[in-house]
Length: 222
Image 1 (tube, rainbow, N blue to C red):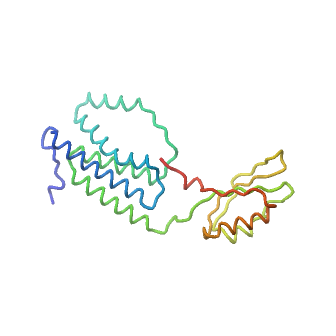
Image 2 (cartoon, rainbow, N blue to C red; image 1 turned 120 degrees about the horizontal axis):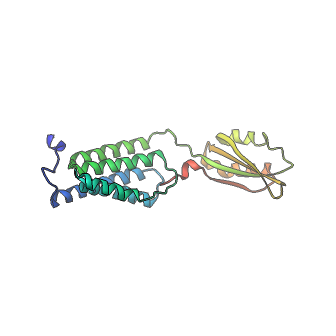
Image 3 (cartoon, one colour; image 1 turned 30 degrees about the horizontal axis):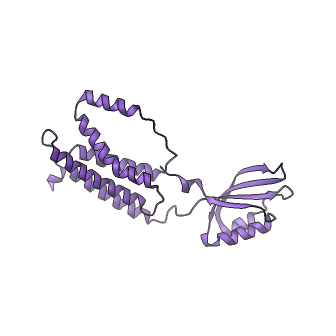
């Protein structure tokens, strides 16, 4: 058991120890990607990044290996890269830190710790995905109403019947001021009632346009 906490680098880095570290880093990246994708909506490019990130980190840290000059050169090279990304979810950020930590452990030679860490964190991630907290989907509802309709409170009865939560977040005029577009954030009680909800809304807004899309909380990705 004590061998788990010993580094495979007894002195200088050899081809064998480097390849072992790369293999374990790849395995850790695959574990991180699979556990992150479990019951979650993530992009393929993000999963590929999670797989490659531990190997990249391991190679970078191995190149530095206590050499101050090389460390400064690597830091300067990475400072030339400009990163652009959309706002990410907290779970995605945690997955990135998981992959980076596994890569750092492999670079230090602690491949056993890296693998054990990835397995434990992966198991915790999968277990937390089964918890019922935060299961409700936030959706964006856009209702077009005529200017003759007093929309304040006009849909409260339907919201109470079909939604757990609703909030008016934006109001704008359209079609030369003859129409209003109301934007709500809603959480449905039962997703299977979506069509019935839309049909009842159409009866209230004069059969004008109604649009429901996945809310911003469900569309974030890295």
